Amino acid sequence: MASQVNALLTCADKPLDVLAHSQGAVAALLAAQDFAQPVRSMVLFEPACFSLARGLTAVEEHITVMGPVLADVRSDPEVDDIEYARRFFTALGAPVPPAETTEQVRALRRLRTVPAPWAVPIDAAVLARVPTLVITGGWLPLYEQTAEALKESGARHEVLEGHGHRPQDHPEANAVIRNFYASP
Image 1: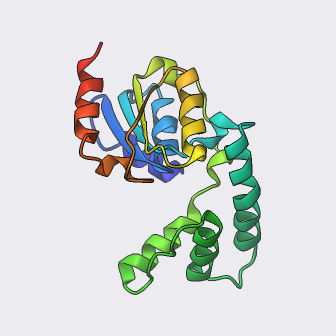
Image 2: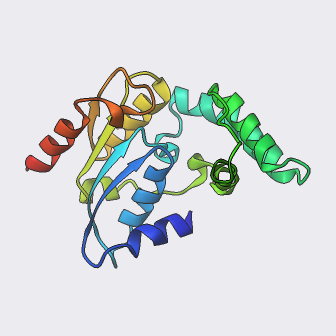
């Protein structure tokens, strides 16, 4: 996580406007907490910022399902990256990505290095300080409940249905983002 945050903070010499998806939203919020390199705004698609939504039903159900997968597989040196990915995506109820090319195998290897998003401490106060738009797809209570928790801390929430976990692919996504930047 530290390398993701560092990558965000070192990529510009002025305040950043950050767009992030899913687990990347955790790194975006951590970067926004750093006052040395200010983040000017954030657009978070289906943010996996579950530490800010602990106690909500869908979030706790997700942790119950995914927690053992992350704990068991990460502690077993006999489980390779591809098997870890298989178990991870199966527990999510998502198709397992292919592992046919070097790039695909690297992506699966990186997955194993990402901490459980509910275990990353995030200061919710950053959402009141940094203008934040959360865009969800309206398809899974896990992300809708998380978005509502972020909204309660100061974020704006928009739902773009029809593209599942990738609301950034919705034809209205760019218009929603432009409207966010145009509003005071």
